[in-house]
Every structure is written in structure tokens, then in C-alpha cells.
Length: 163
Image (tube, rainbow, N blue to C red):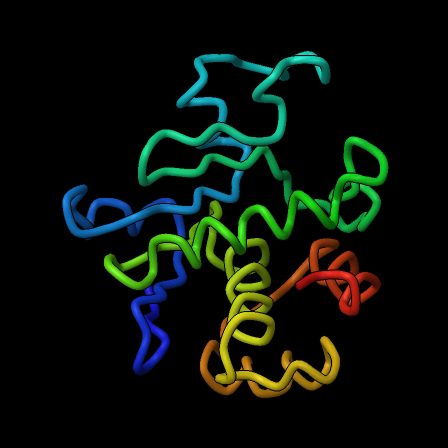
């Protein structure tokens, strides 16, 4: 788990959950595995399920994102990718003033760091907001294990739409 200096933002993997306590933290679980565990399903929910992409439970947001090289999988339902991404950033912003926030995916290499990079560029002045590549260049100095997949392509392609 990596803490971004001078913030309450922590980036990590599923395994870092055991290092936190419920009363002091909020969690953005940006991984299908946590979404499955919370909602109790095995393979997939029907796309019409009301919690197909998101489930919020107080200080937890569960996001049904899989790590895939295809950026198009983050734009589901079609045309909802940017609003979905903004919803995750809004959740982080809601909790970060009063709690530590752990953004995690399975391995802490792609979804959670990309989400955190975007938050730092779009909602703070810690990273440049000029382009995804500019933010990524600075972010890798803070988070050298950044190894993004399709989510980075999605964010890069939609950089000017994500606020």
C-alpha cells in the first residue's frame, strides 16, 4: 500500500484491506472480485441489475470493473463510462477530507492506480491536468509499480471529459 504524500489517499491491492480499520477508512473497491463478494454472485450479474456497475454501502464503493486491455469495457453501459468514472472520483472526494481512503484493485497495478492518478490530476493540484500522459509521467515517480491495462487507454481517450 502506498500513501500519496500530504493526502489521505492510499493505493493498493485487495491484500491491503487487512491493514486498515473500518472506523478510520473509506474504500473504493475497483475490482469485480470485491463486487462479487459483496453482492454474493459467482460469474456475472445481468446487465439490467440495479447494482451491475456500482454498489455503495456507507464508506464502501464496490465497482464491477475487470482488468482488460480493451478500453471499451470501461464504457458500459455504452456511453456511461465517463459518468461512471466521475462517480468513483466523487466518492473519493466525499470521504478523503475526514478519512483515509484506500483505492484498491486485485494487484494494485492498473485500476486502482489509474483511478488515483485521475483523482490527483482532476481534483487536486498534485498532478498536472494538462493530459493523461503528463499526469502519468509525474505519477510514476510516486507509484513506480504502475502497470496499467485498458483502463489507462479509456482515461487517456476521455481525459477532457472526466472532471
